[in-house]
Amino acid sequence: MIKNTLLALLFLISITSNAQKFEGLAETPPLGWNSWNTFGTDINEKLVMEIADKFEELGFKDAGYEYIVLDDGWMAKERDANGNLVADPVKFPSGMKALADYIHSKGLKFGLYNCAGYTTCAGYPGSRGYEYQDARSYASWDVDYLKYDWCNTPKLNAEGAYMTMRDALKTAGRPIVFSICEWGDNKPWEWAEDVGHLWRVTGDIINCWDCEVGHGSWSSSGVWKIINMRKNIRKAAGPGHWNDLDMMEVGNGMTDAEDRTHFAMWSMLASPLIMGNDLRTASKETIKTLTNKEVIAVNQDKLGIQGFRFSNENNIEIWIKPLDNDAWALTFVNMSDKPIQLDYDWEKHNIGDDLNGKYVDMKKTKFTIRDLFNHKDLGDTSKHLQSVIESHDVLMVKLDKKN
Ligand code: GLA
Image 1 (tube, rainbow, N blue to C red):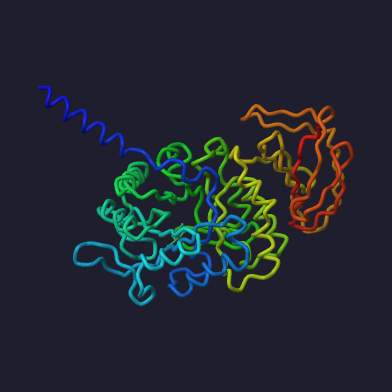
Image 2: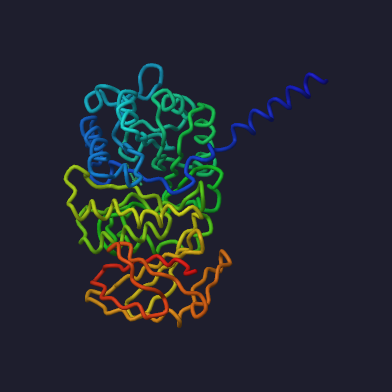
């Protein structure tokens, strides 16, 4: 009897200790690079090593970018005779462990992609039925991050499928950031806080301001379509669990102004900042945007509060994000196709955030104003803020409380 009770207790302890994600891995939104947006399945180890080199050379590492993630297409089309995943021998002749070692030698971290279904979206072996085995492979290759997709999952329950992979990773024992990618279809913001560290909230991004491009059964969305797609999900974001607006398209064909806005908005919304461009050919302006430490600091603010749309008048959207130390980030976006002269009277607009119980009487409390893209101080909130904002561009400022 005692023996049975003890065994039952041990069993309970073992399942409850597995049934949790690794904590402390994404206290601020993950920063990194992913191969998909630019390269699709056309990836190889030389490319990835060159990207890792660029992280150092061009200041991405210094700006805080950490993860280099291989998306779909890194595997051979078949598992080996023992059911193990294998790296494509032509694209990755040295294997995944060697690539992980190279990336780690640069002080960076290494991520891989797979899928909860029988096959990945591009038709490579998925993890369905192999979750624990695959998790052991990732751990043995020193993987630090797993993006886990949702193609070819007929009748699977999303929460259950992602919990299985979470538990498999936990059991394999290597701390791995778990990036859920089921496109928001099953409302992960309602259940994924204890399952993964980030979850995609929409289908795939595409490099345009506000377009939608159909591909038959699914479509890709431009920057503003993604921003506007989900309502009331900001409360789900916070240290360790983030709404993921998808890999960025900065440097992939929009104007520099649109790229700035895209980057500012992903920062305001506390989205993971995962670059999706070819770092080897990035323009000076693209590099400048992506390595802007003052903007990244807004994204990485330790409170981890996702910003929100504060107002939308006369083609100017104003977004607000409460920051640590009673500071605030505000982003003014010119949504029109012409420049706009901004004349903003702070005293007429008290700022606040109901969700977090933060309110400021702007007549009583004064703030200094810092322009985060131009790295300039703009005086304080006792005077109107005046500035010309170009079409589709932003004025992104940080307000710090004056003593
Ligand atoms: C899905 C994901 C993308 C990418 C591709 C790979 O579409 O949403 O981000 O991973 O699959 O096939």
